[in-house]
Amino acid sequence: MRVSAADLRESEAVLNPSARAWFRALPRDVQWHGLHVMHDLQHAGVDRPEVWAAALLHDAGKAVGPSGPLVRAFIVLARHLAPDWSTRRSQLDYRRARGIDRVLAIAYQHPQIAAEKAAECGCDPVTIDLIRRHQDRSGAETDPLLQVFQQIDDQN
Ligand SMILES: [Fe+2]
Ligand SMILES: [Fe+2]
Image (cartoon, rainbow, N blue to C red; front, side, top):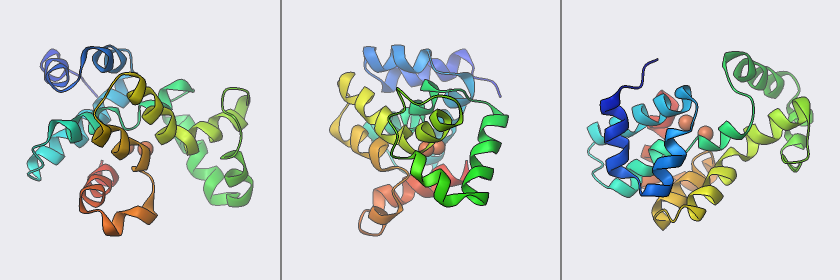
C-alpha cells in the first residue's frame, strides 16, 4: 500500500487548499483507497473533478477514530453477529462515545463526518453530497452517478 509523490500531486490538482491539507493528513490506507476509487472512476469515463474530490475524501470520516485491519474486522463481525446491537451504536454521539461504542458510531457516521468537514473546507456541493450519501443504498436507484460511485467503492 504505497502512496507516491505523483499520487499526492494528482490529488492536489483536484482539491482546494483546505481539502488538500486534510487529505495529506489522512492515514495512508484512507489515501490509498481514495486514490483507487478516483482512478477507477476516471477509467469508467467520469471526468468531473468534483466527483474525483469526493472519491479522494469519501472515507476520510473514518480517520477520526482508530483504524487498521483489526478495527475493520471487528466492525464487520459486530454487524454480522450482533446487527441490532451494532445498529443502536449508529445513534450515539461519536465525540462522546468511548471504546467499541465509538468505533461503531464512527463506522456508521463516517459519511456525515466527512461531508461536514468537506463543507467546512469549501468543497463543491456535488462533492459534499456524494460523500454524504456514499453508503446510502436507498438513493442509488434514481441517481446514476451515485450508483457508479458506490459500485466502484465496493470493488475497492
Ligand atoms: Fe465509506
Ligand atoms: Fe470507500
